Image 1 (cartoon, helix red, strand yellow):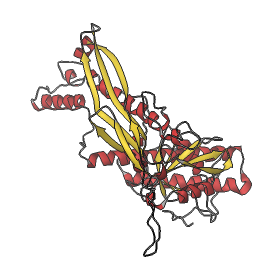
Image 2 (cartoon, rainbow, N blue to C red):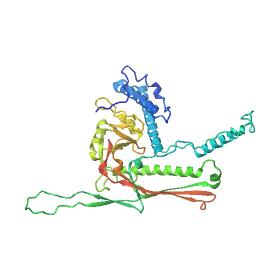
Image 3 (cartoon, one colour):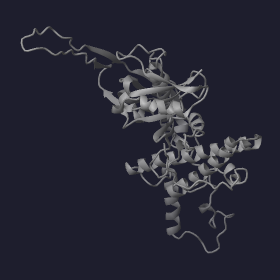
Image 4 (cartoon, rainbow, N blue to C red):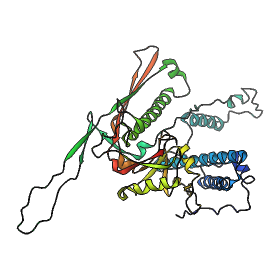
Length: 419
């Protein structure tokens, strides 16, 4: 299989020990709003990675080179993640999000200061150290934003089918298509043939809740909109929890996770059409190019158009080391804004809650997630603002009813690492 690179390969005379020094410690430095610069950085890092890894594969590996390969690989992952985040941001802006990224408080502060300057209240002899002489216009700045600890959010909802319901649950019917037929002569008897059978699966929403508290004085006096911030934090936590459940949930007051439908897992017999089929990786505790190729061609062609790989960053890092029979790397970075990284030409969706590469672990899924997984939403997020129950605190009782499960086992395959 030939894979076209966006840049020529590094010449044989360039040694990996020397070339990647600038890349090794490099982080994402380009303007995050400049897709061309970001992609250029990614391509340079990936070229350095290939050069260093090729030296390693030639038997010239040592501890220093191993460390360099690992560090460059981490840089490639960081650059690709930055581009993926930029793609999300660009999509949000195209959907109507504003281009001004300042908070309302920052905008208000800037407008007030500009209005003060336009009124001409500043004397000729201005100093920052004297409030009457202009010091009022140069207050000590403090951070009006809150830096959030990272929470990794699963992309399953964005790729699955979402069904909004108005009742307590949802029932989906399945047709086994077992209608019979036969060839007969002109005057031969026509015995009864088999008829299709219908079966059903119930999708019942579970409930996720949060009951956070903030004092009334904090809500009144804080220059940060605590109420809005707190509600946004709860929504982010809900997204994190439901993403975990969409992959591995046991169905007890929560969705049934897609990994539980895989052959040999807890819900392998739940679906009327059987379990999600498994392809072995082809090597003990490792990925192989043959295993990845097999899972792609094992998926029925009817689902190939929308098929993607779902794996975490650690697994993508392992896949980045693989080559085909012609020496081409199977993993390729984004070549233009709006496009994801690919593996064997198939898009990769970074799915943080997927298992890492380990013996007997399902390290990747491949298929059409929209056809495979069904998310059930009942009403959406509800917020009850309760200032009475626990004075002097205002309680924010937030609930969301959401369910989920596999609706089609045929449109997905699981890559299981050989034990």
